Structures are given as structure tokens and as C-alpha cells.
Length: 171
Image (cartoon, rainbow, N blue to C red; front, top):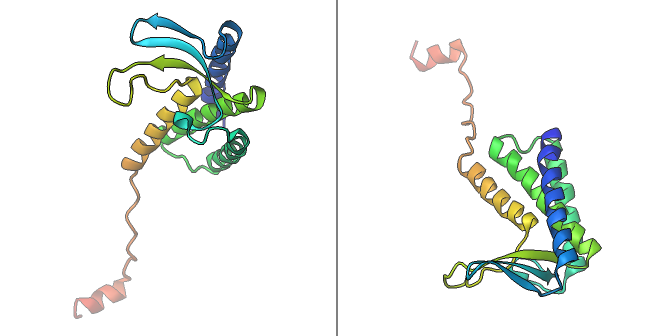
């Protein structure tokens, strides 16, 4: 649990600090250009999930977040995440869930503030996001990597006793 806390808590603090700065220095829906035609800081609210799916379901997402966080911590404590990518993914996912859950409880919505225009179809601009969202996306990638390279031990074949071996040899 020390590893989980050492990664998750600083990222959670960074997420909350950046969102607090945005809330204190921007009006809702305000947009300020940082890199022209590529990157803006904004203050958008999101009561839904990724890409504003299920907008207006904040209470539902609070409950889902609590269940997911508790399940993640229980599985972590039981040693379910044995390899390095899945341990990092767990910590990042914990930070992301905590960050957006805090927003939903404190503000009644998730604070999104990073807006990139990638100048490609469906990403023109990319939906606004935050540090917690980034942690969740990276965690997802790490879980996929972990699953792809998961080395399951081969099923053990029962060892033959010396008597059975000699019978099968015809002796």
C-alpha cells in the first residue's frame, strides 16, 4: 500500500491544485490561448463521464467512483496486481478516481481545463480534460500492457511415480 500511496497521493494533490487554480482564476466556460491554434486553458464543467457521456448523472458517477475505488483498494491489498505495469496502473487509477470524485462532491461536476486542438477529425478540438483524466487513461494503457505480457504458468502435469513409469515402458 505504501507504493500505491506514494504515487497516487502526489498525483491527486497535483490534480486538485491545478483545478483549484483554474476555479480561482477563470470564469466558467472561459478560454485562454496558450499556444495559438493548438492548446488552450479553459474552465469547463462535466457532470458526465468521458466525452461528457451521460451528462447530468453526477450522483451516479459518485457512487460508481466509490465502488471502483473500494474494489481497487481491496484487490490491491490482496496482491492482485503483481507486475510493475499493473501496480503503476493501480496507483494512477486511484489518483484519477480520487481527483474526479473530489470534484463531483465539492463542485457538483468535474473541472476540465486542458484543451488541445489536434487538427484531425474528431479531435478538432479534443474534449477538455484534466490531470485525473490523464492518470485514468495512462492506467488503462498500463493495464492493457500488463494483460498482453501476462505470463501465466503452464498447467503442471502430474509427475509419474517410478512404478507407473516402468509399467508404461512395458517392463
